Length: 458
Image 1 (cartoon, rainbow, N blue to C red):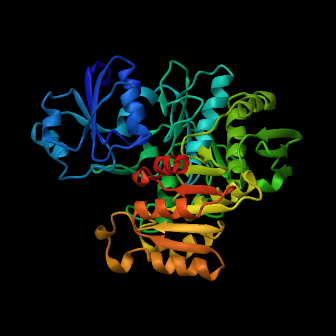
Image 2 (image 1 turned 180 degrees about the horizontal axis):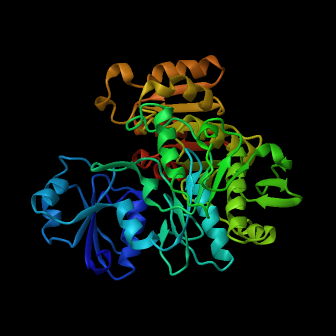
Image 3 (image 1 turned 90 degrees about the vertical axis):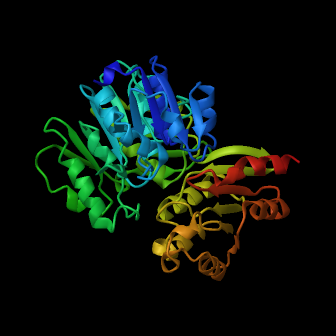
């Protein structure tokens, strides 16, 4: 059925994965359109460059041409004008994971990369190692790997690398996305509580991962982080092989100027990434790559030429000795590990953390104390106002003033600034040569990164 569609419309097209799949389908000769409420870089630029027509704002008129199929993003809910038009006009629709399952995964050898943190980096690194060793894999990644320049590619290779997200599929399908991905191999890198808008507690997240584990075939493989106690209860199984990896088995772990260096099983790996989290990401990749038949030398060849991912410790510019870094980190653990990695990458420099509480979990006070523990890895911290604060009950809202007080009590210089204009003015007024400004947000942050670069140049 999916093979015969000539026109497809994406509702919520500026999501990283949605945009990447839309472009991949356009490259197959399908007429692709899309719409989104907020259109911002890098995905807006990516879609324009690839010639995908994007309408800003949701309107029933966007569906007047009656596309053969409408793909509905998982952030879209009932009441959206285009969703209502789809239902009223009886247009054919599906979720993105369902589309990918039927059109791109079936019949492939599916390598599914999961975990609360590091999925994008791990999946990108694995896809690149396979690619530079001649596998020409398909991949679907929730970011833009610098080696590939887009987040999705679908080839004739038997291998497909998938970033497996535990978030729900769509308003009409509340299963985790990764349950659509037909895994041969599942890698679980870590497991923590997140996505408080759809999960009530850690146990519910563990249940979803347990369902994914149940899909691994007897001739497949389950790979797990052996240091993570939240994963341990899930692996009392006997229907498929299980392997674990741990940092405790490494020798000579260090951080030369070029990244991380570690010895595993007598082989010295050199990784062009920084921080403990990325070393663990690399360990998981090594295990999957070996399963695919690659040698240590072939794996290292991929490490040597890996360029990283947009919005993962991405240096946007260095101006007058001030470095601007863009990072997607929003969970306390990811924030902590990103700032620790920044201190390793930029030794002796003063680290700023400019944090936007924007995810559905960090907008709430669930991580009130944990955020303070994470952000104190920086010396200067700016916390913006909570995004879409009016949609959360006051008793549940993150208390940014309390967060700032907790940080100041640790000796850090922390402040809460209500507008991006105020944040920009503050940085431009106080940043000094040698400072590293880490901007931490899982959204556009009103284009603070580019505005800061322009301001420093001026």
